[in-house]
Image 1: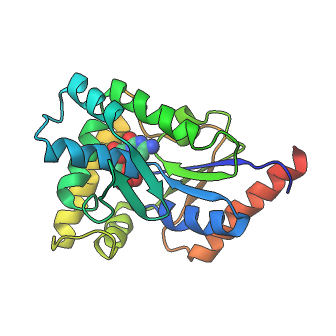
Image 2: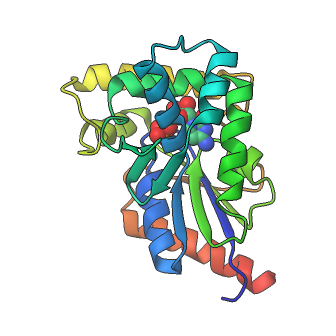
Length: 221
Ligand code: C5P
């Protein structure tokens, strides 16, 4: 494979984006970028600095002034390692709140685009195939039943908290509602995305389907 492609993987929380994006990136020798980590880092800093999560101008300035680095599973904002601190129920809510603000998204979308200037990237998020890279070489949209997504999230060791499954389900459903119904870059499947319902599917099968789509794209390029 000569040209280094841009692969966009979107979908709601717990659909399997992280696991699949990581595996596909490893297979291709590409960089994996978890775009949600940027939204979480900005949400974390806003909470730390007690900036109201609906103050668009203040959060825009905060995002613009912040240095955010995402390398593998390590996330730093202004050189503070927030890799674990951003995976809490409080920061779930904060990230989803600041993600509703169009001017904040503009800052983060520009950063995400700059990470893929020469391709060779598998980027996961909510608007990667629709807004960040509308011309991505391959677009995938992963989904799964809400109950299964909540179960996966409740068992994900990266996410801390002692919430019950019912609490996780209700928080996840609230975040999804916000992501799907917001004015700015709502979550939906791009018309040209390969849509996969991962409910009950082994990870290896999903990875294989995505890699097949990538090979098919390369063959017709
Ligand atoms: O993917 P993750 O759950 O870490 O993302 C946290 C939140 O960041 C999402 O609920 C969503 O509101 C926001 N987000 C977004 N666009 C992206 C990635 C994440 O709006 N591309």
